[in-house]
Each structure stands twice: as structure tokens, then as C-alpha cells.
Image (cartoon, rainbow, N blue to C red; front, side):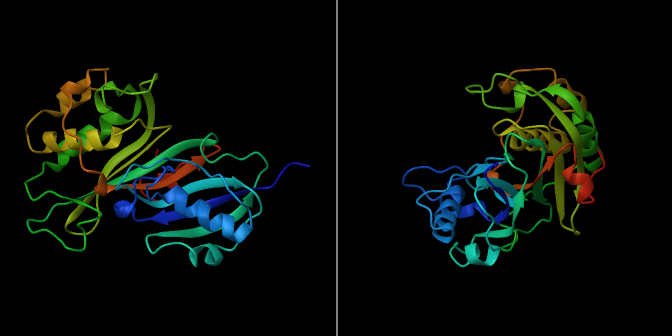
Length: 257
């Protein structure tokens, strides 16, 4: 008989975490969750796998993680977790399920506050950008991202990646209220800092510091030095992961692939 596997859906504010991955001596989302799970399951150790490893300061609205073992009540875990992470769901899934390996897509949002004055409420979750933005130029950039491209220009030069092509299933900018824009993107996988460099470069296009055509040319495997700056982590939110060919953004009503 196959060992049981459970799936978690997790939400967290990444501001005070050193990212998702467990690191000795540092406060991480994985470390907090595994500690709570070991208490509830009465096991010495519980190992989580995750759909999308987030960096320090990056948030999640629907992170997916899995572990070997029976499901537990989310409120039992949340009673042991700190204020900035919560388990939304915990249920049994198919034997052998792996949140990372079995994911066929991942989706993110990057939030930009576009009003002139800063917001105390948005300071942890959105990049404040008080300068004028050319919205049609942003849309042209997003449209050009869909499909398979070489994203060498959008990840650090020193990297462990050996494959730089990614399949972008959907990408667009949308208004979220009168004062904010969100960049939504879903792909088979992402490289380190990829979305943050995309956003930093697109904002240069929107500020007429480079053209949309120049941005599209970067998708042909240009070097990192040709792209723009890396947007800060606090505007980035992991939305969820797709499995068996499902699309996160289509399910959430954000973008049709």
C-alpha cells in the first residue's frame, strides 16, 4: 500500500522571513511550517516540498506544499504558527504527489502602487511608483512575453540554471483599484529574480527610457547587462501552481492563456 501524501495551501507575508527554504539560524516559512507539522503529527521531523521557492521578502497567496503523512486540521496548525503565515487547506492527495515536481505551471503577481503619495498600508506589498506610466507600452511588453523565449537577460549572470528557455502561458497588466497595477504572469517555471527583472525593465519602457521593441529583443537570449534593474521583492506575490495542465490565472479569473 502506498504511503499517504497530503497537500497544503499556504498564505504568508514574506516581509520578516528569509525566504521559503529552511536555513540554519534563520527564520523561514518552511522552518515554521515543518515545526508546526511535527508537533501536530507527533513526529520528530516532517519534510515539505514546495511548488515555488520564494526569496526573502516575497509573499504568497496560494503556495502549494506537500509532505508524506496524513492530513491535519488547518486550525490545529495555525494555532502553532506565527501571525504572518497561515494554512488555508490541508487535504489528502494522490500517492506519490510532489508539489514541486508535479507542478505544470506557476503564477505570480507583481503589485505597483501608482499614486503620487506613498501608502502606509501598501508599503509591504507594492512597489511605490509615483512617476507617469505608459500603460499601452506595458501591455505591449506583456503580450510579447507569451510563448517560449530565452530569458537569459532576466536572471543573474552567475546562476545554477542550465536551461534559460521558459514557456509563458499568460501575461498581462491589470488595474487593481484606482491606484494600483498588477502584473500577472504564469509559466512552466521561473528562474531566480526573473519576474523582478522583467518588471524593472518594463517600468523603464513605461517611463520611455527604452522601447517595447527593445524589450522584446531581450527575449532572444541577450546578456543580463542589457536588461533593466531588479524590482524589489516586496511587490511580488506567489499566486498558486497548476497541476495536470490546469491554469492558475484562468481559474482565478485573471488572464486566459
